[in-house]
Image (cartoon, rainbow, N blue to C red; front, top):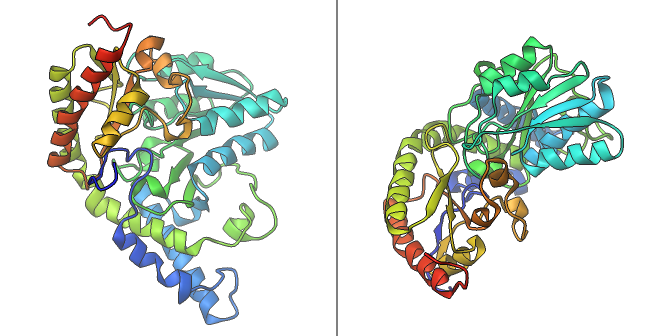
Amino acid sequence: MEGTPIIYFDNAATTRTDPEVLDAMRPFFCEKFGNASSQYYDTGRQARTALEESRGKLAALLGAGADEVFFTAGATESDNWVIQSLALTDSKKHVITSAIEHHAILEPLAFLKKNGYCDFTLLPVDSLGRVSPDDLRKAIRPDTGLVSIMHANNEIGTIQPIRELSTVAHDAGIPFHTDACQSVGKVELDVVELGVDLLSLSAHKFHGPKGIGALYARKGVRLTAFLHGGGQESRRRAGTSNVAGAVGMAKAAELAGSRYIPDGPRQATVIEDIWKALSAAIPKMHRNGDPVGRIPNLLSLCVEGAEGEAILGYLDMSGIQVSSGSACTSGSLEPSHVLLACGVPVERAHGSIRISLSHESTQEDALKLIDAMPKAVARLREMSVTWKG
């Protein structure tokens, strides 16, 4: 509603660009605007220096080497790059992934399979959204060339046992990729400790700018060029470098270590307070995902007798912005593939709500949600012709 202060609880979709990030980016639009590939004069060299310093700062957040980090337009591009690289260069064209992956993994695989470039297997998950290392081991075939399992699910927040899964893949000589879009900047991550060969991320998920992301590729992993036409990113991704974006992502990476990640325990406490209050006030409401092994800022719920999209509308009129699931499937009338894979009944899945916080979210904001949501659900149940209480 116009004029109502906004409470933003959809940080899994995107985050507000941190003012310090924006300040770091400003000079590279108007003052230090050079092309990082132009090394014959000072503005170009300034841009190149900033680009490489940013690569190092992002690598430090991941525990990687700077020469293992490649800038992209975001995690969707990074995911597509990994999948395409396998399809074009590897003789083993079978991919194993999970039934709850982001569409940035599932749709490229479906496209490539339809056109005869690869085959893939979807691993099931348990009721909490976890992939079993034993299921992965059983799914491996002689022609398996890649395993891709996301670190934390974007809808329910469950964190996968990545170290165990990557060990299974490596025991079979198979590279392991993870989409860590929802985890980077929220929890401590180290690519060496995780045992991953490839990792995708987006800056806008941790208070950086939109339109910039990265792909970590362990030294020695086969990775074909994704875009052709120039020597940027070690001749693997052509195109004029987004220096301002890289600088912004690097600043966000620095702030993640000092501000965002340390705030995780507080956010987890607020999430638990929201859950306890709402579950007491709203009968027949269910929590999705692992309540313990999850990212700290996300709560996924299913409310019986009320459509998720309708709840969103009522909350929006109170100035509270939440989601019914992934922003990439917003507007779809189909129930979440993630919830269905977890065994949630179709009719219950239609009542899904995702609440996701940031370091800017306050206890006072949470109290307003706790007050508004039971009223919204009660009103919708009153209007329902099928709700029987």
